[in-house]
Image (cartoon, rainbow, N blue to C red; front, side, top):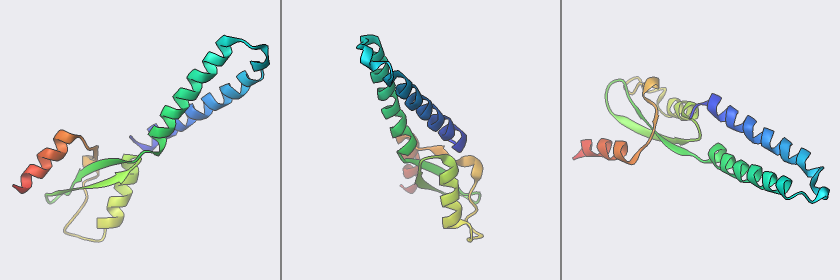
Length: 115
């Protein structure tokens, strides 16, 4: 996920929150449909909250060979962490194009390079 995608999720969550707030003004009417819509929005907000805050493992390569990983919410954050970690080392130049969310198969493939 990129920073732009993260911002879209945050915007969508805020939009749902605002809609729940508006629907709350109609709740005294006792309309089951309104309660169902609010529940649906609340469930979606919970799902979005998890996506917005959950860190993922991002794998990346070095231009001279080798790989490493960073835990972050977005690939942009993972890149910033990698540069903070390795940016001063001239032998380990981080390849910014190589950042990708880790999958079990990709991770196992990279670990197999050690055997």
